[in-house]
Image (cartoon, rainbow, N blue to C red; front, side, top):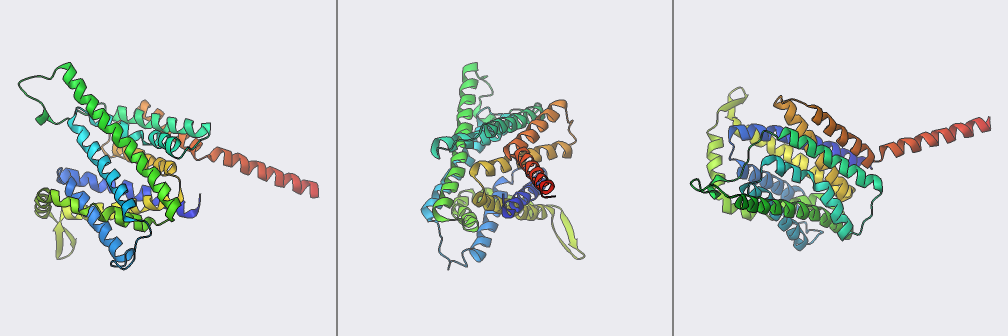
Length: 342
């Protein structure tokens, strides 16, 4: 793995994990600000790309707009399915567990589409990491209540077992579709970079520019939360200058999201989609552990077992042990050669 990929991985963890901190503050201050947060992230990245990547529209894209449109469509379908699944009897822990299955989904899609074949160690490591994250998620989310939309239920007529199972099955279907389309999107990016070359900044720009018109449909909600954010408690930046605290959180969230997502896009050009999925999955796991510490939740034996599975699985996946053995054998050969020459 080259130094560019190593730096990108480090920035993914720094940017994404710090982004979670600002998101926690935002959710506490204004729980309904999701559309505003997403809009500001997309707007900032699109503006930055328009100035520095597209050179104010004078630089033509190296990869076709049609290809970027397909990526955006995949991302949109994934987001809609993941968000809408909450309305169909899908509790938060189960939602998180499905998201943790992205490694296995990516491996399956790689086998089916790219006809890839992996060493046994890769299959073992992916299963161990997935099992570890699922275990930690189940334990951490054991007290989380169902988040299904109460508006879909008739308060006067309790749902039958068949009705509950039907809506739950529909929710599971949505999560499964989202999981495999997300994996397909990673594979598609890998194919595009092999076909056209590596242009992470351009891909970041167009995949955030093209969806912007869609936010017009959310104009009312976005404006409502702009007003709420502007009316939040002021905080002093420097003597004589203060801004609403929610806007400070939004600024921190947008900047850390840019650091996170731009690093992920660089990583997609340096590594396979499976490796990128591994990094993003591990980042989510670190965020989960951080959340446990942040909210001072108990770290049980099950958490330790899950952490151990993830740690060992990561070592196996990255083939650190074989590299150690190889280095040791090389050093031994050099020593033997040196003794022979003496």
